Every structure is written in C-alpha cells, then in structure tokens.
Image (cartoon, rainbow, N blue to C red; front, side, top):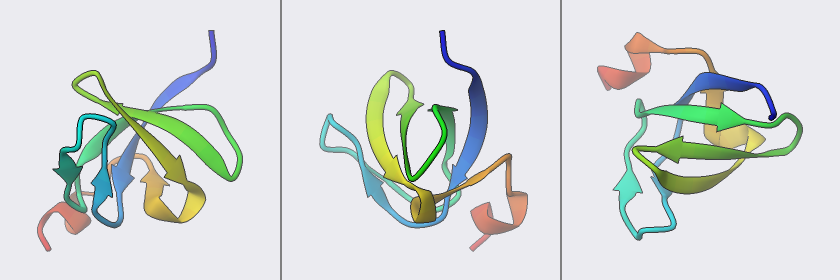
Length: 63
C-alpha cells in the first residue's frame, strides 16, 4: 500500500462527487510525483503538484 500523508489544498478542487473543496481543505494524499490521488471523506480528488502543499497549512485556511 502506498504511503499516505496529509496535505492542504492551495486552490479550489472538484472531487469525483462534484463537490468543490476550497483552499485550506485538509486532504489525505497518496502517491508522489506530478499527479497524486487525494481523498476528503472518501471523495477522490485527482491533484496536480501545484494544487496542494504537503502537510497542514493553517495560514491558508484563514484566507
């Protein structure tokens, strides 16, 4: 099983469910490289490298 880590969205991203998650949303990230799989409460978000940062960023959530 790939390593899983937490990340923070930097831009709004639509999940497979159609829900759009705002910047500052914490996501569970799997994989490495230019694209990764991310999940929010079971909703899949295919992310590009520029759409998230590794780790939690509380300062982004305040914007």
